Length: 121
Image 1: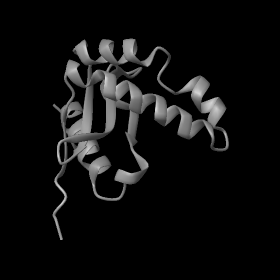
Image 2: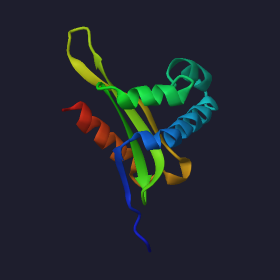
Image 3: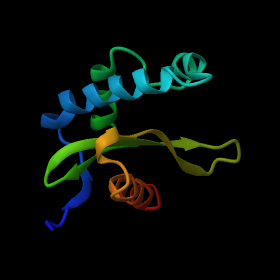
Image 4: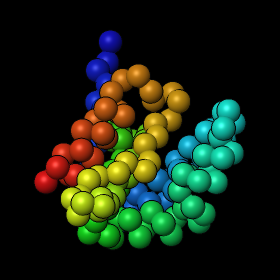
């Protein structure tokens, strides 16, 4: 049996087209669920996804990550720092998605660990 090499890393500009494709898949998948059209209109990454992902990739107060299996991108996540009413700052995960065939092996967990570690700095 071959071991699966799953992990997560910070996204780079060369990844963004793949990440935008994943964002579109996430929106399409979620839109089919109960309440999905409301979610898509309120919470989903706005179109064009590519532009908003590039903006987040370049922002100092945001992080975009990719989840990988054997170095192939199979998921993505994004977090942004937001200020609360009391002036404190927290990280708000706005995106987390793993391709259906890549679920259940720890890719999402690896991405969340990376996002949370960044927000905690």
